[in-house]
Image 1 (cartoon, rainbow, N blue to C red):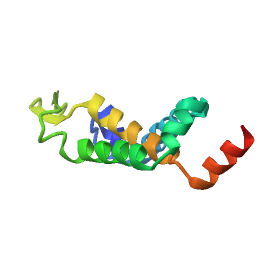
Image 2 (cartoon, rainbow, N blue to C red; image 1 turned 30 degrees about the horizontal axis):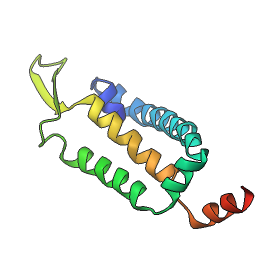
Image 3 (spheres, rainbow, N blue to C red; image 1 turned 180 degrees about the vertical axis):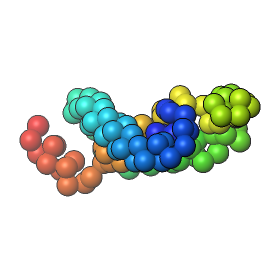
Image 4 (spheres, rainbow, N blue to C red; image 1 turned 120 degrees about the vertical axis):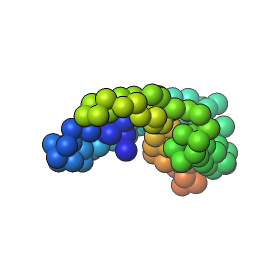
Length: 123
């Protein structure tokens, strides 16, 4: 989905290249989520994030909600179909990519009890 938000449909070529584009964008999002997750190694943030899975669950839930219902909430963007020249109303690219990144961040940095215990013992 993110790949189609970032590109326009151009016939069969888009259908062939979309999986590769999706893999590249997903890889960049996972890498960025892991790098940003390094901030969670700061002790106060670490204790806050790992105290409960509620924070990660809320971020993931809000992201899925925006991806599923953002269009109906008015988070839209007017684009143009290159073949017909007609306007097309889609989910706003910032909302789509932002919600996708937040979902990946929440899943990639999900608080695991085993990690929490190891971290507290080490410090």
